Length: 231
Ligand SMILES: C[S@@+](CC[C@H](N)C(=O)[O-])C[C@H]1O[C@@H](n2cnc3c(N)ncnc32)[C@H](O)[C@@H]1O
Image 1 (cartoon, protein in one colour):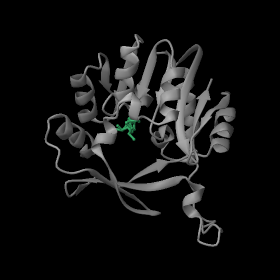
Image 2 (cartoon, helix red, strand yellow; image 1 turned 180 degrees about the vertical axis):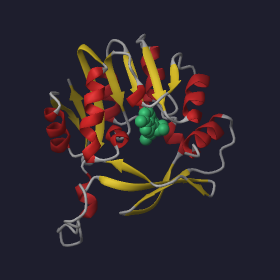
Image 3 (cartoon, rainbow, N blue to C red; image 1 turned 45 degrees about the vertical axis):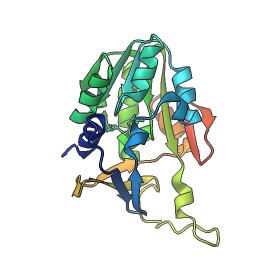
Image 4 (tube, protein in one colour; image 1 turned 90 degrees about the vertical axis):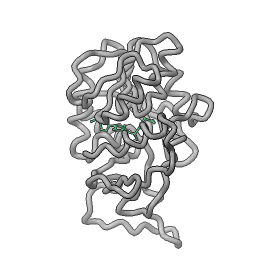
């Protein structure tokens, strides 16, 4: 991993902003991911994110913390927060912005236990593939204190396969439709392709059930997105 994501966050923090991150997938063209968005304040967050932050309680793990926006908000509310990310740049940015406990580790290497585990900005993306989802959920379950909860957002991207006459063009031989090949580029350089998973609520709920977790719909967004509370 070249850590272009972390480099972009660091550039922005250092006042060296010149261009945004570009993302594309196997079913969509180039799209700008504005760096300002990755530094959004509570008032600029979606209602789903605001709801997740309101539901957070106790000792919190912010998985894939990015620039630390959710961790900083919760810290300001007096909660104890640990922020983790696999991006070195993201952890440096989070620490420099004031996140007290930010560590460079993958969620699969986390061993402490928490009252709330937060996975925001299509949190299911980190699971990569539908088949790997039970593995991640099982591990997250081991990180929960009694009465602990996982707050995770995602989107049912079925709408992206809809053609002009209302039908769906999805290849029946392909994997689950929410598994996308995802390319991230920044300043003319690209990361190797990764798989990024969007999960519809029913599929997430079924995966949760398969590992002994309960999944409830905490809130529906306005564009096929949702916040799930898992316990
Ligand atoms: C879409 S960004 C979300 C950033 C932030 N949560 C936000 O809402 O702005 C996903 C983040 O997850 C991190 N990530 C990916 N896989 C991870 C893993 N296995 N463990 C921890 N973090 C991971 C990425 O480096 C990236 O910072």
